[in-house]
Length: 86
View: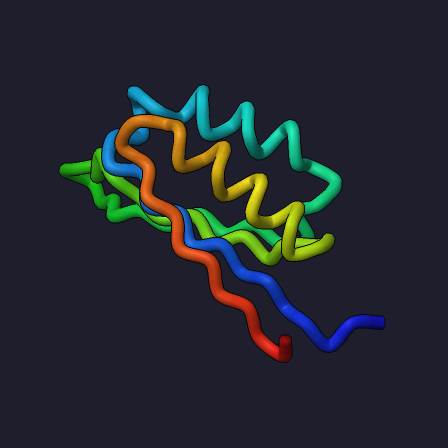
């Protein structure tokens, strides 16, 4: 069992426009996603066009970097990688 935790924070600036491309990357790396949390503002009057997805990544740092690179290719997407216990 590894003591390293890799977290990817993904900001999507236009969810409606970019959701399909982002989801494709998530599907390609589906076996590497241990936990996925999606956050966006919503209430009875508005649904925010932007959002944040937090991924707890299962796999190597190289695999996480490859996923990050694929997400970085999607217009309107910004990714930050955090590594704990390395």
